[in-house]
Image (cartoon, rainbow, N blue to C red):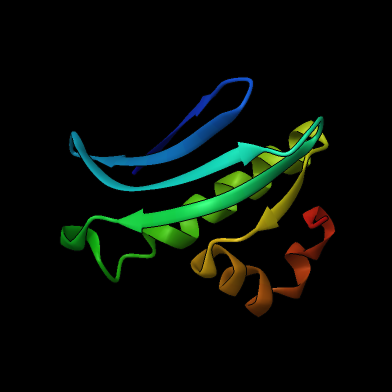
Length: 93
Protein backbone atom coordinates (compact mmCIF):
# COMPACT_ATOMS: atom_id res chain seq x y z
CA UNK A 1 0.00 0.00 0.00
CA UNK A 2 1.32 3.40 -1.00
CA UNK A 3 0.34 6.58 0.83
CA UNK A 4 0.45 9.87 -1.09
CA UNK A 5 0.24 13.32 0.42
CA UNK A 6 -1.28 16.36 -1.25
CA UNK A 7 -0.60 19.63 0.53
CA UNK A 8 -1.29 23.27 -0.21
CA UNK A 9 -1.41 26.50 1.79
CA UNK A 10 -4.81 25.86 3.37
CA UNK A 11 -5.52 22.14 3.31
CA UNK A 12 -4.22 18.74 2.37
CA UNK A 13 -4.79 15.01 2.45
CA UNK A 14 -3.16 11.63 2.78
CA UNK A 15 -4.48 9.03 0.34
CA UNK A 16 -3.84 5.27 0.56
CA UNK A 17 -3.54 3.58 -2.82
CA UNK A 18 -3.42 -0.18 -3.41
CA UNK A 19 -3.49 -1.86 -6.81
CA UNK A 20 -4.52 1.43 -8.42
CA UNK A 21 -7.56 1.83 -6.15
CA UNK A 22 -8.09 4.41 -3.42
CA UNK A 23 -8.19 2.42 -0.18
CA UNK A 24 -8.78 5.45 2.02
CA UNK A 25 -8.26 9.17 2.50
CA UNK A 26 -7.68 11.46 5.44
CA UNK A 27 -8.09 15.22 5.05
CA UNK A 28 -6.75 18.11 7.09
CA UNK A 29 -6.74 21.90 7.17
CA UNK A 30 -3.92 24.20 8.22
CA UNK A 31 -4.63 26.09 11.45
CA UNK A 32 -1.78 28.55 11.19
CA UNK A 33 1.95 27.96 10.83
CA UNK A 34 2.97 24.54 12.06
CA UNK A 35 -0.52 23.29 12.98
CA UNK A 36 -2.95 21.01 11.16
CA UNK A 37 -6.43 19.84 12.04
CA UNK A 38 -7.39 16.34 10.89
CA UNK A 39 -11.05 16.74 9.97
CA UNK A 40 -12.04 13.52 8.17
CA UNK A 41 -10.92 9.95 7.61
CA UNK A 42 -12.70 7.67 5.18
CA UNK A 43 -11.89 4.08 4.18
CA UNK A 44 -13.20 2.38 1.04
CA UNK A 45 -15.51 -0.47 2.21
CA UNK A 46 -13.53 -2.88 -0.01
CA UNK A 47 -10.53 -2.29 2.30
CA UNK A 48 -12.39 -2.40 5.62
CA UNK A 49 -10.55 -4.18 8.44
CA UNK A 50 -7.10 -3.80 6.87
CA UNK A 51 -5.89 -0.99 9.11
CA UNK A 52 -6.02 1.62 6.33
CA UNK A 53 -7.33 4.40 8.57
CA UNK A 54 -4.64 3.86 11.18
CA UNK A 55 -1.94 3.81 8.49
CA UNK A 56 -3.18 7.20 7.29
CA UNK A 57 -3.09 8.67 10.81
CA UNK A 58 0.41 7.26 11.40
CA UNK A 59 1.60 8.80 8.13
CA UNK A 60 0.28 12.19 9.28
CA UNK A 61 2.15 11.75 12.56
CA UNK A 62 5.36 10.92 10.70
CA UNK A 63 4.88 14.05 8.58
CA UNK A 64 4.22 16.12 11.73
CA UNK A 65 7.36 14.86 13.46
CA UNK A 66 9.55 15.31 10.38
CA UNK A 67 8.29 18.88 9.81
CA UNK A 68 7.78 20.08 13.41
CA UNK A 69 4.00 20.32 12.92
CA UNK A 70 1.38 19.85 15.64
CA UNK A 71 -1.93 18.03 15.09
CA UNK A 72 -5.46 18.52 16.42
CA UNK A 73 -7.53 15.39 15.61
CA UNK A 74 -11.13 16.59 15.28
CA UNK A 75 -12.03 13.51 13.24
CA UNK A 76 -13.43 10.93 15.70
CA UNK A 77 -11.42 8.10 14.13
CA UNK A 78 -8.12 10.00 14.25
CA UNK A 79 -8.86 11.06 17.83
CA UNK A 80 -9.45 7.41 18.81
CA UNK A 81 -6.02 6.46 17.40
CA UNK A 82 -4.39 9.16 19.53
CA UNK A 83 -6.42 8.18 22.60
CA UNK A 84 -5.35 4.51 22.31
CA UNK A 85 -1.65 5.27 21.74
CA UNK A 86 0.01 7.44 24.42
CA UNK A 87 3.29 7.38 22.46
CA UNK A 88 1.67 9.62 19.81
CA UNK A 89 0.82 12.47 22.19
CA UNK A 90 3.99 14.46 21.37
CA UNK A 91 2.46 15.85 18.16
CA UNK A 92 -0.81 17.09 19.69
CA UNK A 93 -1.64 20.76 20.24
